[in-house]
Image (cartoon, rainbow, N blue to C red; front, side):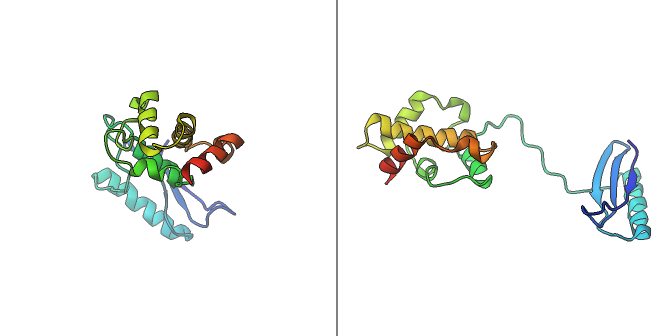
Length: 165
């Protein structure tokens, strides 16, 4: 689709937008002006910059494909999405052989969870300590879903409070 200068959308934005592709460069960018003449000047400037190979717009760096997400990166994404950090903090801050923090998510299995639970809650019964760690893992893995999808079942929430308190 060629570059087009789009007029302001009432109720959405007062600014003109430039949208489309020109010489392989994709634009979907606001001109930050509501004046039609100023927007046309900006449009022509961007088009000329693309033609000269000078157009630079801040684009997020692509993530390297060989980097495996870790428990810590998934926990951070969950917290940034609005999730609670209370149950994740002890697991992320844990160090030592049983630590899950730097472990790739694909490598977290039942044995890793059991080791982390035993290290975090040495005096808890097996079921209680595993529930707290498993619940944190479940919450972390569902960070991108809606809030209702990752609310704890009533019994599990009580176990966590008892174990973590």
